Image (cartoon, rainbow, N blue to C red; front, side, top):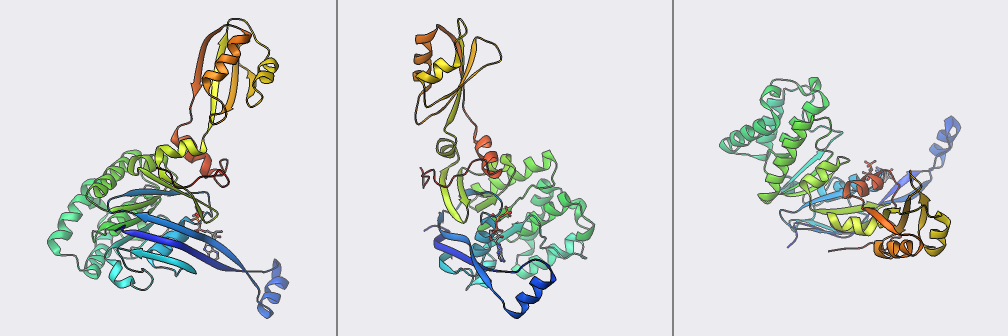
Length: 341
Ligand SMILES: Nc1ncnc2c1ncn2[C@@H]1O[C@H](COP(=O)(O)OP(=O)(O)OP(=O)(O)O)[C@@H](O)[C@H]1O
């Protein structure tokens, strides 16, 4: 049975309709009006034990809302969610031991307490045995350099230091499922790499990870599966590599011919491609949709116009796909994407 299971999971928020300014606020007080806003829209998700899933999407797509639903912080408007067979919003206490949540922007440590005291409180709350606690702290010290932070109150930590302490707090009780939102934000390069390595180790030991990150190295370093949400709907769910085929179908072919060829003549012969002259007169750049044409067909057409002496094809990398997705340049909706792989 999947460890995380969601069927038709939906969350509708009510947003106040309020005209700007004082008059608008006063009017809203007298006559409250709301517009429903669907933040998570019939999401189906099944994640197996030990799977690490990157959960990405543009700002406001519904990532945090999904994580809040999966951890029982908020109730679904519609649909079902089960973590290890239990409904998180009904069984929060029982599930607290099985779930770890890290929201990069918020801390779960006590602001005025030294890190060591915060962790000790969490240890007692979760009933972690002293010997297990010591072993885990030693490991966190190796990975996160926690030792030097133990006597420092949370409010005095830098963002990177706080993230290290918060990661320890999230994993202290050995949860089976962890939701990590931007887990390496503020860390230096070597600390980021150590955290990824540690997360891989946790994953391989059977921890289920749902990770949201703008850092592509986190996504690629930890996860093999990618789930993309856009406007509350899952628009892609499959292996990381398959996202490339679904969203980045454009290929760029650079061709060198023995003598200059008029780009318009090529465009006439290849109406589904965009043809521009390259840096040098003998080079042409042809952009085309991989689903509509092949590089071989493009070269074939060109070789009828002039002798082709060299060519190269650019394929987008997965980082490129994800970066463009975050920037809103690639809109997955309407591409016919679905569960792949
Ligand atoms: N409590 C709330 N009341 C009303 N609307 C909300 C509430 N929480 C979130 N929303 C709206 O729901 C949508 C999804 O928000 P959510 O925070 O889940 O997005 P996200 O993908 O995590 O975005 P980001 O990458 O910016 O953190 C947004 O339009 C947001 O404004």
